[in-house]
Amino acid sequence: MLLAIDIGNSTIKFAVYEGSELLHRFSIGTKRDYTVDELKFDRLVFMNTRVGPIDRIIVSSVVPELDDTIREVCRSVFMVTPLFVTSNMDFGFSIRYEPPTAVGADRLVNAYSASHKYGRPVIVCSLGTATTIDIVTEENEYRGGVIAPGIAAMSEALHLKAAKLPQVEIIEPQSLIGNSTIEAIRSGIYFGYAGMIEGLVRRFLAEIPSAKIPCVVATGGYVGLIASAITVFDHIDETLTLDGLRMLANHH
Image (cartoon, rainbow, N blue to C red):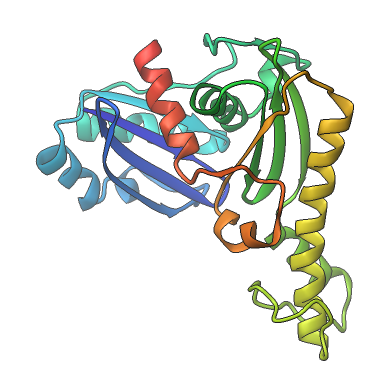
């Protein structure tokens, strides 16, 4: 059994695979100061005894402070030393990013997963704490992309920088034109974020012309909230990163 762990800025996702079949997955909130004892919780033990046994573990992490803790938890609970994703791995594409070590592991895993599941060229939009949009070209090159604020970061920044504007719950507005301050803020954040994604994807398409139109794949924690307002997505794939980790583990 393979355990895939995706350590993100807001959540840590766990998934157990047997071959290509996803057997079990769940997530917990990310805290940068987790201790080993805090992460050795019952659900991990349950996975090892009732779903497992786990004999392979692969980890993608964008929170370096947690790497040693997760490594120790894996050794303690599963008796397995995890494989951490790095830019030195064979992703099957060349990395045109300077320096390659600066690319987030999640961006590389998503690009790898999308290019295998949907073909090339492919544009990957990850809508999480940060928004990343990346491309793997028809020539099998990871060309990098853009990093922008996530929708929650936009909402929080507006509240912090404008003293009279409250922080609002991010939900889909009833209409574009808000008839109260809260509705106006909600509409501006929601549709403004959707417009940013659509505009960036269209700029990608214009900047990197291709004989074949790139497939556009969306993933990330906020994709379910915002996808209905965005017209450029071809596929919504909530397990893109975890599936990519599974494929990488089987390749290495």
